Length: 231
Image (cartoon, rainbow, N blue to C red; front, side):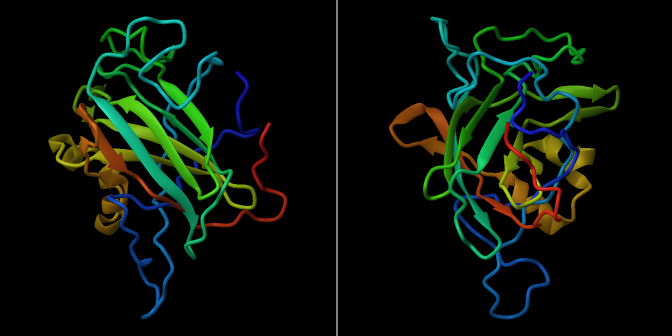
């Protein structure tokens, strides 16, 4: 697969989440206007392994398919910024996720739930001049990770900004009972968990859609010689 990075990592990342609210970085001095980096989380095993002909920002409609993806439709948007609040135009933003049944389009996913042939599963874009991004997708289903652990609905993010360490994280949905039992989410400190949990509400102009905002803040600059390179 043609990857947007030359190196695949399990780095976790830097950013903020919520409905447009930036929080002061934990430990920052009084009066500091620095933003809180998004907690880094593992990439997981299901990053796409095959190039998709269709990898645009609308995951609900696969090019050439008459049928749209099954599931609750989402509009997911946000802004990529540095910890000092500067927008990052051109930042590469990738998302990938399970379909509504909780299955990934990946050969290592042994979940017996059916795939959705009309769901795109993965998309990417370059942030606009204001650092903004916007995807259309569906709410992913929960899925069994082990016999005693079911992962809550979540969307994987990877953000690449030249001069900074690449950010890999996961975004969760507010109000999910499984959030409190998820080992990956609960591994974060309570303040960090809030930064990756997003509340969705009705989308403007679409009664059948939900909208949420996940604002991403990149925080750690790359060491010399380790800047991620775009292909």
